[in-house]
Length: 583
Ligand SMILES: Nc1ncnc2c1ncn2[C@@H]1O[C@H](COP(=O)(O)OP(=O)(O)OP(=O)(O)O)[C@@H](O)[C@H]1O
Image (tube, rainbow, N blue to C red):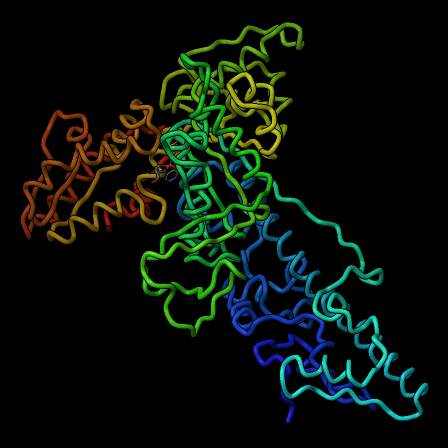
């Protein structure tokens, strides 16, 4: 029976590999990598068999861009697959969705690639060491004339003393650095390391910056947190240190260090930490926070102290290795501080902000005659507000990323054209610097992506189209009373129009819905409730009918829809399909 000298050490591959011909199984000191049992077990469980799970090259062939999606499944989609899933929930913002999906996909693709190469290199090193060991044994045999069989020790440490006392020559092979640690090897190929690409999302309030990320995070199955930059201050001042966002990610990952190190941190309200004038000249909530973010974003080791007051902590000794033993008893007793060290190098940072006023900075820059644009630029109330758009000279659109024909927006709020370009699409690092960001931090945002204000059409679609749309939500709520809720198409357009005027993006829709439905909610229950255009505009009350009012309800809907002008691009059939009547 094989008795391991260090029973708590579990060899990764050697234990399962057949010994080389003429040799017995390797002694414990020849194992290339020893991993505590808890780690070995835990690794295979990380990320739902994602990053560190066993890799089967046979599954690779012809599947996925680099690796088998089933094995390295975080995320399991190409960018276009990811976008399709986001499309179910988020209306419009195609350019932003494409960029975000590609950035996230590439990030995890880079990580999977690294994991794959690490596994390959480990196997190669093992193979080289085994060959070296075999050669070494062969030389010893031919030198002494008697075969030398390595015998595994019965007791830990016994092997050293026995070998020492027998006066066997000390081989370089026996040195701890050769046996227990993976060494740099000339035979192991040097790999290209793909660095992460952080992303900055700029856009007016309520247009879907956070919503796109939230939706994606549910598809990705990685730890994901949104931290508000408003609460951050420079270390040593009242407020939260920037490291708090890593702590939140750790909690989100249920104290799994490995998962935390591959998570996504969204820094919302990022524009609020722009430099500002202060009386004492010390900007602890602005520039101080930017400075503190530099290392975090680039990659540093953050030590997080967590007071253990839970009984089901998965890690038994988190500070030592980062892996817990799943079968181990609950964590340390209540009140004890645990220390977690998180490497932020592979954490993806997404910065979000409305950047109110940045459009003016951009317009000022591009309108300077020195740049070559002599055209006059009409600057209204600011394109950063939902609906309000600037009309840009045609030449400026040549500088936009996708070289697309411009969609010119009309000035009235709410009449924005879907997917239209805005001055924010022309944002450069110089503009961000003028806005109040230090160049060192700007340099760490590799993608700048602008979201456009929502058009009237998009607002209407948000009401009805996405899964979990507002109409579906309120219809479901009324069903519980029980009441059946209906909207006419004109009522929905009226809601969208009023929301657009609020200039709060899609958030304005919910506000309008609450206002319109406040009375029917109070009057509930009734069998049928119909919201008409007059009801939204406050000229009439919501219509109620009893159990036998179905025919009357349908007649009323037809009557209101008949008012629609011929140029309306939404037909009653489309309206029906959108789920208003049948909901
Ligand atoms: N394009 C969209 N499609 C569907 N729903 C949307 C869209 N944009 C916004 N919403 C709705 O509006 C809500 C607010 O959106 P979100 O949190 O993304 O705003 P934001 O752009 O991050 O604004 P802020 O800068 O104020 O945080 C979302 O919860 C979602 O319900």
